[in-house]
Amino acid sequence: MRKIAFVCALLLVAAASVVVYGQEDYTVFTYEEALELALETFPEIQDLENAIEELEDLRDDLRDVLALTYWMIAYTRGSTIRSHLDEVERQIEELTLDIRVIELRAELTLRNMLSDIANAAIDIEIMEASIVVSEESLRRANLLYSLGMISTSERRRAESRIMQEEMSLDNLRLVMANSQASLNLLLGQSPYQLTIVEYEITQSEAPVNLTRHITQTVAQAPAIRQTQINTERQRDAYNIHKERCHISPWRDCDSCVELHEAYARARLDQSLATRTMETALRMAHNRMSQLRTQEQAGSLELLQAVEGLETAEINLELGRGIPFEITQARHEVLDAELNVKRFLYRQWVLDFTLANPVLL
Image (cartoon, rainbow, N blue to C red; front, side, top):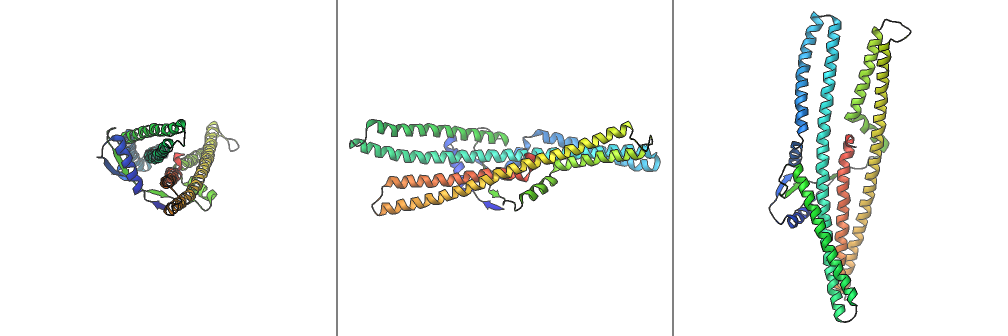
């Protein structure tokens, strides 16, 4: 597991947001605090918890009755109560899983929003740096125009480029404002409040044996476990009924046939769910592999950009370069550096999905 602290990214988001919102006061939450606030905006969690409490009370009552049944009432009555108790416990498991899925989806939504805000801040900083380069180009164009070395149309193209970039910057700031408003809505905050969430990006290492990793992950997934439990329950119901069926030792009764068909459907559902999750996991791992490759390529581009900046600085010291080349080289370094961070944010979101395949 690699940890990458993005303190500079946090400051980057704050600085970009100040420009968008026109204020310097903002509220800062830790990631855990933000997640807790996000969960409070999902009222269905409380509804499911209330339903679980009612089922748990019913389960306790059934257990009390069952304890008396085996001593005071006929065996068949106790068996019926046991079946009812098993069904209640199954419902509790399903509702508990539903709550967990909602919590995971809430956290995935939070990560996506934080990633969107970070990417918007990256786009804003890149565009601001590009405008600096374009302004320097315009100054050079004006100088050359005054010396009669370029035409009017060439100078106007330099002016037009700055206007287009400034319009793009305004659009990017609007994207940032919308992303901030969406985050505020998720956290139950005012849409006009500037909210910053402190967090760090963690990256898991690629599995050594992907096939084995996928098989183990799917086997441990709660959703797959639920299908397995259902299959076992249908199998046990069929076997118990068949043992008690006295119509004929050579053929099943109608109830046996129905129970066997239900068992077969449960096995099919389990197999289909397993294959579906395995396929989704493999596709997600392939996307992660692509992101890691893009990150590595971006890191190489960053190294080349840094070397280019060093070369430009040396040339300027030796009198073989101009200041504009330094400005342009610094922009290329910033562009490459922020693009690497963009890939890391995407990995951060996808890594959470891979760790919780129920989200696929």
